[in-house]
Image 1 (cartoon, rainbow, N blue to C red):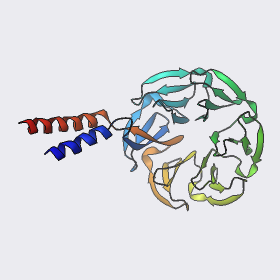
Image 2 (spheres, one colour; image 1 turned 90 degrees about the horizontal axis):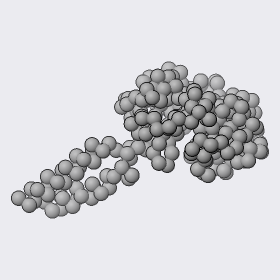
Image 3 (spheres, helix red, strand yellow; image 1 turned 90 degrees about the vertical axis):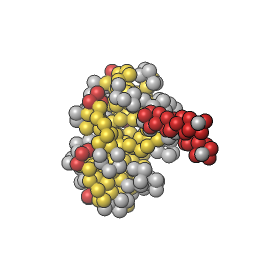
Image 4 (spheres, rainbow, N blue to C red; image 1 turned 180 degrees about the vertical axis):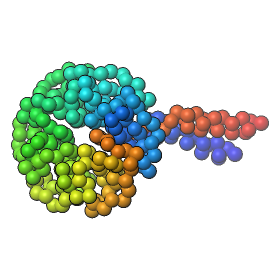
Amino acid sequence: MVRNIIILLLILVCCTPSLVHSSIIYATQPNFTGTYDLTGIRENSFTSMSNGTDIELDSSGLFYVAQPNFVGTYDISGNRVSSFISMSNSADIEFGSDGLIYAAQPNFVGVYDTSANRLNSFISMSNSADIEFGSDGLIYAAQPNFVGVYDTSGNRLNSFISMSNSADIEFGSDGLIYAAQPNFVGVYDTSGNRLNSFISMSNSADIEFGSDGLIYAAQPNFVGAYDTSGNRLNSFISMSNSADIEFFAVPLPSSLLLMISGIVFIFNLKKKA
């Protein structure tokens, strides 16, 4: 009995919101942002986050959602904490290693602190559909006629015409660039040479690598799950018309922690009896 109690106490210590997490898919759909498990079952929907073009999670656990008239910040329950009008009409937002927010707005990429004060703006990156930070610390911006490579001062160092008209770009664990172009997802090395193209993922608004190593592509009628050879393994109609999909590790429900705590308490009472 004592051994059982010790094991349960260890579980309780480990099961704190800051340590125990579960991977969930957040999909920004027209009327809400839906949360899904890895089988495509919707667990929740937040209408407060409707019409989002991008969703990001900061280090404090707040969600940043790029909505038409502002970037809204939300808690885990979907309650809006603040709204930043200065970042309106952002197609994409990214957190830099400097802790600042980079927002791809129509005429520039704006650089903001977490209070939404604009510190800089890069006109050179205008009309970016997506921005990503590479492992080299550079900013990769998906602009209409190319993907531009910029330093953090906004100076363009390179441009890859081969990746033109990309709706989204992602870096794979293999170090390659995956670009969601109209008729395929192209796979490129960091010199812009195309190594592969997956027609099966055509018309993707967004691509994301899952914790299972698969590529999740937000296509018009579903989110498709693909292996790295472009073979579709699954499709989730429940996530149709998603502008952005993200995998986030979120705290387990507090009710589960209370349940475990209650079990420990009951065992302690039995031991004393």
